[in-house]
Image (cartoon, rainbow, N blue to C red; front, top):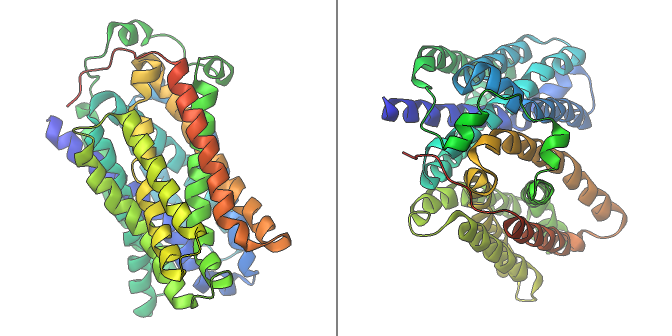
Amino acid sequence: MVQILLAIIYLAFISLGLPDSLLGSAWPSMYGDFGVPVSYAGIISMIIAAGTIISSAQSDRLTRKFGAGKITAISVGMTALALFGFSTAHSFWMLCLWAVPYGLGAGSVDAALNSYVALNYRSRHMSWLHCMWGVGASLSPYVMGYALTGGHGWSAGYSYIAALQVVLTVILIFSIPLWKKRALPAEAENQAAEKALSIKQVLSIAGAKEIMITFFCYCSLEQTAGLWGSSYLVLSRGISAQEAARFAGLFYIGITIGRAVSGFVTMVMSDKNMVRLGHILILAGICAIIIPAGNDAAKVGLVIVGLGCAPIYPCIIHSTPEHFGADKSQAIIGIQMASAYVGTCLMPPVFGLIAEHINIDAFPVFLLFILAVMGFMHEKMISRTKTKPQPKEQ
């Protein structure tokens, strides 16, 4: 039964990644149909992100009340409904309306799944599960491309992904009995019936602010590198747009492959040291971009930054029960997710302003600053938290 549930969770992580890259791949074909500027994709993205922030912050309360299995099934069902809504939308305001359940569903399932895996499975599974997210995020553009090249239009692409989400929702509904509570430390058992922690209570926990800033910085760095890396290579280094796009794609492939490899490395290295290794690799990649060693070094440096990003997110999540205790991990992870989405929304546009009004050459310096803050806050969090008893892992 344990292995069946683990397989279902792997499928759920693929499902989590499917919608994330769908808007970007479909929007060039969508915006003309709605008669809006191409920049309006940012409005939809912000609405989705706002929903994820809200639902992530409330995940502790919802999961305590309904359980991780039900929350996951409901959240994936909401996402499926939103995707079908997108496929039938005939005006931009309808897209904005459907973006609300789109974001709310994504945030809830993200926090609930991450917390459940952190409590019940070993670190290698967390890395591999986030690798599955990358598989889902890589798969949906191909599905959309199939719909477009087949002459079915972008709405069919959304329908195909929505149908996959419906199938997974049905599987999750039937799997709810498998999501039984694992053997937790006595501290967690004693807290199980207590009320969910408020945001104020979470922030008062030693190390909580530091880990929030760490997550904010990580997602800021990943999203900024992914969004602006190609533009930097073209505008600052004079690389062709086609070649720059290829290496920007390799940045994400580096994250996905890196997480697959990280799963094996976690068998011999602790979560905190995996995060430190990620910081070192990112630093090496940024240095390769900065040093005057030619364009090849800059291109390879961007890929190394992607490899460095790979272990950080899953290993910080998995180490949450160790640092904060199993009883508080759901609340902490929910706040971490919310902080991550804030970083995703805020910092790439901030660098866009820097690139426009100062110089895009500031790209590696901007990444280096974020990395420095992230590394400092992670080490400060470790010093402020004591190792807590961990739940039995599979």
